[in-house]
Amino acid sequence: MFKFEEKILLQQIQRGREAAFSRLYDAYQDKIYRFIYFRVSSESLAQDLTSETFMKVLQYLTSGKKIENFQSFIYRTARNLVIDTYRQRGQNELPIDDFVKDSIADQKDVAEDVADKFSLEQIEGGLTQLSGPYREAIVLRFVEDLPFKGVADILGINEEHARVLVHRGLKMLRNILQTKNHNRL
Amino acid sequence: MNYTLLKGLKNLNHCQSDTAWAKTNKQTLLSYFNNNFSINKVNQSFGFSLGLRPVVATFIILGIILVSGVGTIYAAQNSVPGQSLYVVKMFTEKVRLAMTPNLAQRNVLRAELLNNRVTEARVLARRVHEQDDPQAGKDLIAAVHAIKSDIGVLQKGISDQARAASESDVSDINDNTDNLASAPVATVDSGALPIEDGKKAADIILSPEVQKTLLETQKLLVNKDLTNAMVKTVEANAKLDLTSNVTSTALVTPSLGGPIVPVNSSNNTNIDNTINNTAAPTSPTGKKPVDSQAADFVAPIIQEIPVNTGLIQEK
View 1 (cartoon, rainbow over the protein chains, first blue to last red):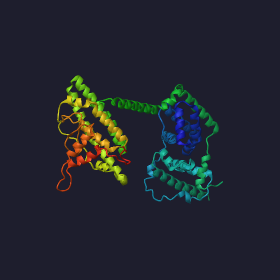
View 2: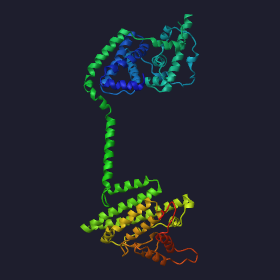
View 3: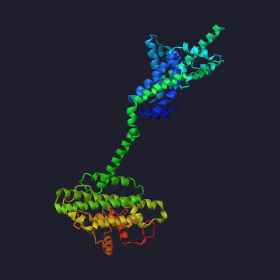
View 4: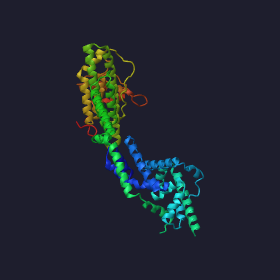
């Protein structure tokens, strides 16, 4: 969905047009669900948080506030809900900066080197072992096929930072999967 | 089925939520939506106009500025010196002059504006006579000097136009035009006012001669008869001379610093004789003094030597 299309839909939503909200819901429901699911690894929790995400967006729109970038807004809302959930459960999130304070040297595209074969279950399992920020970056970049700029907007970081997260996350994921394969053999 | 890492990640895109849950969730959200946006629905018909509010407001403001601006300019057209809108009138005239790139058209416009100045001065002159207003008298004298200054500017413009014409086509150069192009331009004394008698200035301005001469100048400029137009400006300048006892019939060449030559403008023979008699002797260096140049310049014009160039009308 193009950004200008989203802006029109948002205007229509604020004028009370149900069909406009329905379209936005259909466009984002699965994306948000997946984004949350790969973070919480629980179908029911992902459903709850997805529903809550849309409700928060609706409440925000009801208050008459305007949303400039809907995609970024809804992903961030979902992300904040996931973080809140973790906090409530006493599980600490690893801050992004702890992982990315090194230099961003060695930025060759790891994806090109990955030639190993994995099953979908293995990849999904490996993904759940990544820490939060890396997992989010990988899901947004490769599962949702968002550009680095989009990933950066959602995660609230700059584009270079997003590239580092994706690069390192991919490297970690490959190591996790290779280790699993090696142990299995 | 095995995947490479990136392909596998991309295929995770097929992971979807439960359809039944998605449907129920959507219904719940839509009912919340309908409950909370009902107020907006009432005003739905105004939504479009509200969305366009800044645009409409901008157009309204622009409209007001345009209408008030045009109204002010229109109202200023009838203003005279001393009135607040006179500044606007002067500004619009300056803009008109600046927007006229062609030298000939600019001179025609200058002549038209000169006529406007005389019309304004006539309004002030009537006030001097009818109301005996000393301020109007001062304004009038200032207006007369402004007119004389404008005549000087017009003379320079005519001179420039003649020079440009002679440079653009050498084969068509006429002697008279040459004189005109090289003629020094009238300079108006901008010092202290020679007289403070507003009534005398009013008499000069209220006589129809000045305006008639300037209207003729304008017509001659339209017809590109530069020589005769220049003569008319000299005549008009003479008629506006506040220092002279001769109020309506005096021919001067202020541009050349020459003497005032009292003449009857309706009698060309007298003019010819007068001018020929005023010719100054040649200087030892062979160059003629300025007074002599003035006579040389004006004499052939007055004699109305028929010319047959594209610049000067054939008589």
